[in-house]
Length: 379
Image 1 (cartoon, rainbow, N blue to C red):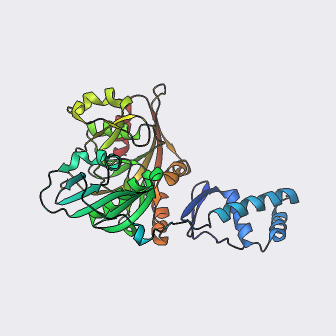
Image 2 (spheres, rainbow, N blue to C red; image 1 turned 135 degrees about the vertical axis):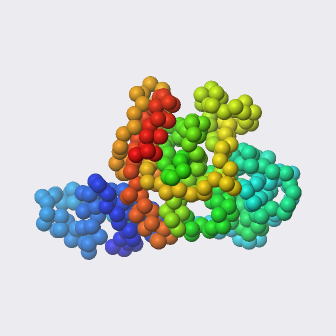
Image 3 (cartoon, helix red, strand yellow; image 1 turned 90 degrees about the horizontal axis):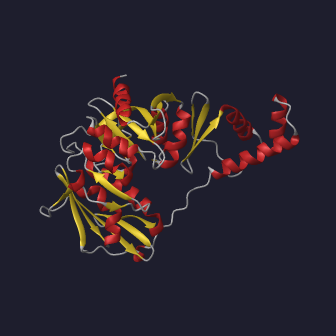
């Protein structure tokens, strides 16, 4: 088929298949029955051949066959389109310069300085790292510049251009900055990561459990509650998975909690009232960042993760934890995360994810949620 390429990787789950397409770095989760139709489509020379093969195994009308053919064709063409990358001319790049908005952050023996082009740009990144601020002193290990020119935000690392993003897509800048930060902390490059998941992760001294959920479902608040009850927050909202060992790594940002959770969390953290108040960059809501309790320089940096919990806070629900199918988790996990475009890393992701056990926690009672997580760590 013209412009249509078969998936590079295929992995069978319990009731479905996951297909990965290299050119677009897209994953499709499809049913077994649709997988059979896709196989016939890819094996067919044209629509008549497709219809003929279907008729040999099922009593399907020409009209229905045409509908299947058209829909599968459009689906596969979509996942075989290369993403468009706008590359700026070097002459159009803004020049790095000292600004009035500069901060230096300390992580053990690594110090990272960031020059922000304006207060508005600083407010996109600084709040979640404010707890790690140190006084200017020694020459920083790494220097980032985050600048604006016209309607784009530009990111530089040690004066090397990293990328640029429309001001309206500032979340892409935030994600790339986070990726460059963990590269700096662990002396790695983008190719060393299988994925960075939009998920919070908690751990004990042996393993990690990843927490996922739609925005507003309480995953960061739950992570803070679990930390107050003796667990370690390995990462909040940004959980990086290494290609070397397929383990999740520590991301030492503050834990973002919304105003609605302040009254719940205040009794759990002695200095809660002293934590600065910010306005979220994505929504007009008040938030605070709770500093991680673990010392980045001394705490273990990575743990294996073989359990994912999808959480949903519902004040009127009966709290319960139950096992769910991986397919349900992938519907949330894949669209919300950055997944490496490298063929080898995609294979590692599929090999890792199919061994993960998945659960759903609906909760209204924090005490029950804590006990369920501790029970899950012990299982």
